[in-house]
Image (tube, rainbow, N blue to C red; front, side, top):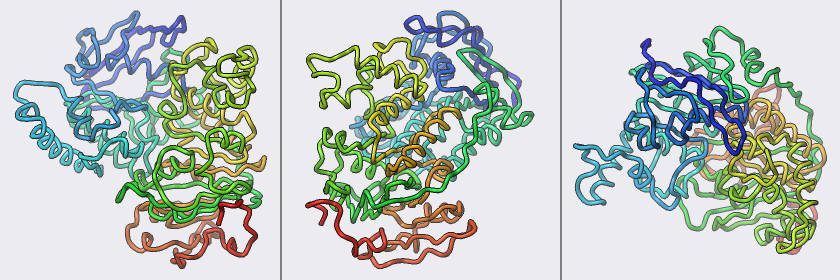
Length: 555
């Protein structure tokens, strides 16, 4: 590794609406190293890196590139210094294709062949570059695919390709493995480490201690907007890293066995109508019972996002059955009916589909209850009651960074925005909880709190469905695990599940992808061979012999 400093921030301070997000913060990354940045949600990590990427201007302090003081006027200026940042919440234009999004981020430089010829010719040349770079990184990306059809994990890959193709040599990755499977994360981090060894500098903003221990050369810990310490991750234990990050070790929770009740949600032969291939639903069958957590694992882009959209009532053309006990066809339920049915929905894209960033914290908390009259009418809100209950929820769910209930939700950090969504969705004692990537971007303490809330909902009798591309999260939470591959559930595992068997089901394109799969029988941590079951057989075994609980449309 080089001893030269690639980027150095010294004595940096920054405030928002009187709140001091950064106070005399310091950070230095050298050429040739992977440097991790740790801290709780709201610790100032993203604010500091946004200054490094030219998105924010510091109120005090200095920024040096190659030991020379620079002043960045914006992200384009940062790009001239070959700084590229992949944000936790992506900056893609959804209707555009992958190639069109990447073209937007390319600097116009003399001699760059991508900016010669017609627009179509430029796109075709760029598509070749995208495919080459994607193959080099081990990504599977179609340059002509519209980004609004990509999973969260696939969108992240596009963002990484965008900054690398723009020539970034100082690469800032904000929670890069939060939406990746074990295999994808391993490949990505090996790739960025090799990128650093070629003379670049990689800054890894992460909450995953295993990533820090395995791939970082140095780690800097932040807390409360200040830099706490920079050290060699190999010289400190994981518990000590946790203590430095959150101030105390996060309490470990022991798994308590579930006591499943009756079948509450039944999904049968769910298929996409307008899409085909990767990401399409291809006959999803699953059964969810009261008092259990059902986890769905899988490599990104195998239909998880589309399934989440269908379950949560978001637009997703499909056919098949989605039946809720006591109601019937859930796809016919309005948003008001879903609230009355006490269905909690926590999507992966908290800013895009879960929160209205321009509305206040209190308004985002109360928006789900406006139709009920609890806070008056839309035109005559009972603001005192709304703000009192919002304040109680903010305190109860430890939503930090809320200086006023009237502040815009967009000013919250990603983790605290997630906690606000969960506070709202859990405010009515849900009977069905649908959640996609619940702890994406959360720190150790916040992740433990979210997991505890999901377990508490299960123990109170709710049926909980968790879709996550973080296999550790699925293994920690789920009582049963379904593996999604090629748009359908190809195998099921009871707890305790065999990690290697799950991984094989996630990536197999052979015998596991043909026909419906029988549930794994797991004992003593070992899984038997997966055996096909007849396509006509119900996922909830014996369901065809029980009385219909799913209402008049449940046939």
